[in-house]
Image 1 (tube, rainbow, N blue to C red):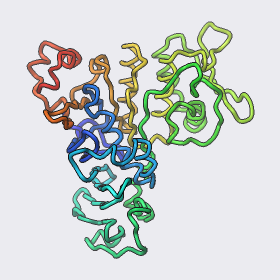
Image 2: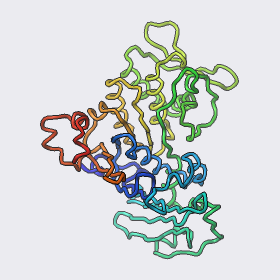
Image 3: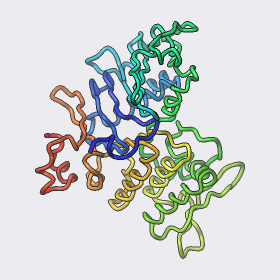
Image 4: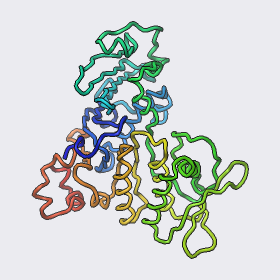
Length: 388
């Protein structure tokens, strides 16, 4: 089954993603489905693939400089064998796809945008080429439909300005607006002094907050904004933890809220600081995926690191349900997770003889004879997936 055959595509999700010049990802081009689990050895490029997708999102938010700073600087991200970093993202729209492209090159100790492009391929309609090129032109939706380019209405300085495309309110750019909310969510720190265990200020959601410090806010907004989604959250908690009864978000002081976990048969609830690492990680993932403003693509780095095998199985079911409204791209080192997914949901990352990353879907590997005698988990544990 190909990615397109699994289920209707989420508007704003990725049909295909190509990256060149990003760390080990010297030249990787892969099609993506609603649920994508990335596996591979340490240092092969799994997290870099998530970072490359976030690179596109942060460019659209005009945050490339802080993004590269978070990763140690542009020169630390750029592949040793290349002199430019580029991405192409084919993004699902209501009537086809648009392709967003971005290229950055070194400029002293930093970077500059050397090209940014937008192309459109409508179902039953023409393919537009170079509808936008930041080096010389700015995108104009009406004229681009007829294949014309307009001169920019202002001077574009690629060292100062980032993604001027987002200034243009043409309806064809609305899907790109959705991509601006895409961030990588790592496995959160749940130690005794972690933010997720403390009372939290009820302030507007920041999608750049990825350490669990807005868990209460997220759950509160789900409860108030979409009771049906909050019921799904509760149903999954009851399935995962049979003694669970209900969640309570309680205002404790000065616009701060605390999380209280009620269990059947117990008069007193547990506070967040008393919950296990696995429960907190599970809650955090649910608060991301069931939030009313969940972005069209969610990037998860090692999301099941605290989970028992049964909890992993339940989380995969959650991923599949949520993939009907958001595309999920997750990395893992857990052989157990592979037990519960299908070959078409599995992306295998390996490195070639000179250290460049390669990526392919497990459904494209020659696994038929292996699957007659072994599970996908056993095939991976034996190292056969990367030998194909």
